[in-house]
Length: 360
Image (cartoon, rainbow, N blue to C red; front, top):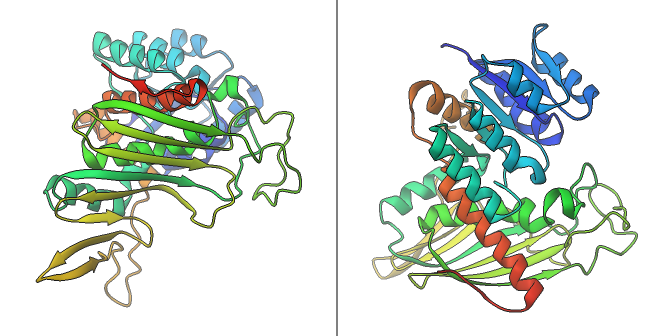
């Protein structure tokens, strides 16, 4: 396969935790340049994932100006800079893979979509949970009408005590918020995608910071710095769509709850329902009996085969490559990610004003 020439902007946690390992595993990418505000991080990325010829930058604009051969840019920076880096990259003739969420605000995300249309460049967002086996199976069931009309759904992103204490996760200015915009965004994206419904009517939201000032928290990554904790620790949204369908979104990094789930959705339709609470479960009525089906989603079937397959980040990279090099279909369309950002912003706004946010 012809290698796709790419540049990496942002060499922090999400780059090293998801994209760069998957890019290396794929083998169809050539990293021509890496960029990070901290030069040492960029140099480390070059050493581990690049080649001796990979160039190192601390200014993404210099990368865009100098690297004419680059076909696509990965924007893996804090949320604050997603929009302008992506827009500049597309205007420089590059396709873009931008990490989630699309942007801090709806207006920023809207400009990204407009730029993609104006330039004709591919723009996709890193909602890799769509590529999980359970997600793909459930999406197929929804598309085939097996659930009927999905009129009620829940997006689950609940952690009991797992506040990220590194990077800028606790910084409202850099990130735009806490668990809602960080992990709630995945749950909401999955839910909207399954419903294939991107027309919201109104939103009510509640945002809390009730545990962020506590000490001795039993947090998974150690106690957080209370002085730097400027975002919410939990948030909840009630979303009504134009066709009357209703979505409840729940997100937390710290919540006194044992009902812990992340990047999952529950759907209720006229023919059947589904959830991801204990693996993928589809509930329905057959022959006048209540039925729960649990599809076998691993590939195992014989003793000598362990069923190992591709992880979601691997499929994400393959899909992006195919879209850029072969004109393949995007799974995550920017117009869909735009609505996710619109709804997240509305939940924050509603929580701030105490009023519902209505859409035209």
